[in-house]
Length: 179
Image 1 (cartoon, rainbow, N blue to C red):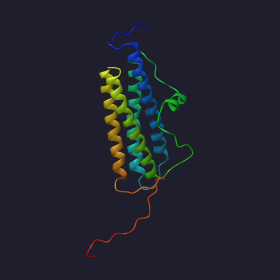
Image 2 (cartoon, rainbow, N blue to C red; image 1 turned 90 degrees about the vertical axis):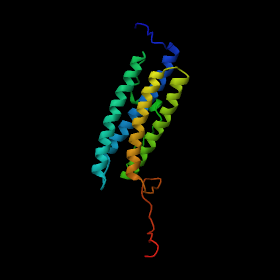
Image 3 (tube, rainbow, N blue to C red; image 1 turned 180 degrees about the vertical axis):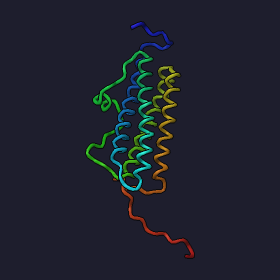
Image 4 (cartoon, rainbow, N blue to C red; image 1 turned 90 degrees about the horizontal axis):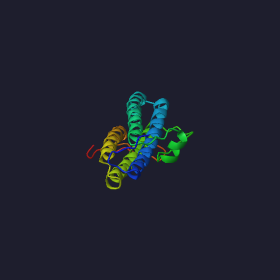
C-alpha cells in the first residue's frame, strides 16, 4: 500500500482508527437492537414506533458505512464481525428478553446516550491526543444525529414514569384543587 501522507503519523492514525472501530461496533450493535425492536414491538404504539425505528435503523446503517469508510480513508480496516463488534462495543445485548414497547424505547434511549458519551470522549481524543480535526468534526456530526434520535425516543416516553423493567407503575389519581 502506498504510504499515506495526510499530516498524521501512523501512530495518530492508528489511535483514531481504534476509536472509530469502537464507534463502528456500537453503531452496528445499536442497529441490530433497533431492527429487533422494530420487528417485535406490539401494542397501541406499534405503528409509530415501527416507523420511528425504521427511520432510525436506516440512519444508523448510513452511519455504519460512513464510519467504515472513514477507517479506510485513514489507512485502516473496519471491524466486520459480530465477535469484533461485541468485543469492542459498549452496547449490551438483551438476548432472550422482549420488553414492553416503552421498555424498548427506554433501552434504546440508554444506548443512544451511551454512544453520545463515547463520541464526546472520542471527539476530544481525536482533537487533543491525535490532532485529527477532520475525524473530530466527523464524529461531532454523528453525535448530533444520536442526540436527535435519543430526543425523539425520549419525547415518546416523556412524562411517563418507568419501572426498571420498562413497565409503568400504578399511579394514583390526582384531583385538582377545588374540584
